[in-house]
Image: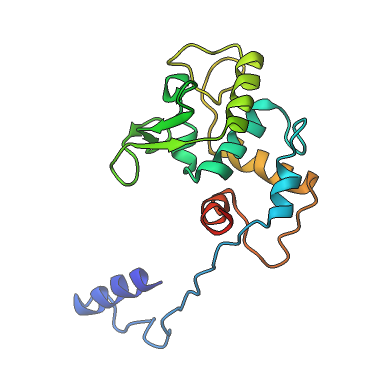
Length: 188
């Protein structure tokens, strides 16, 4: 709205309009919502020790479990390739992120980082590797059956479906997938 007001004021200054139609419009105040944090019980329901719980398959479970334990961003997770995992050292190297629909660039911080991970997540990577048709070093970790990358729609739809199946009601909390980032910092 502020941009529209500036444009219309400029039109008045240029004498393209006789008066500013927005002169009585007050400034719109936006109240920033605070992201919710998952409870330990909710995390247990989302990521049970056995099976996939509310997730469709190993790809879904592993992708979101990795988000929950690493605090990595969506763009960093969906660009991961098998070469970014070190099974012996049990760490993940995050070096790049999606910058748009088809553009890969550096991470938001501009730096690569090493994320140590537990044996449990590497067990999930082993399961994913057994179920995937695409396990070459340059293949995407999280991909469709044809090897193409999963995207934003996949990310949001799978997450919403899992929340419903796990019977997690946000109840006034804002719980997008990005909530895993503050959850990692709060619970760990």
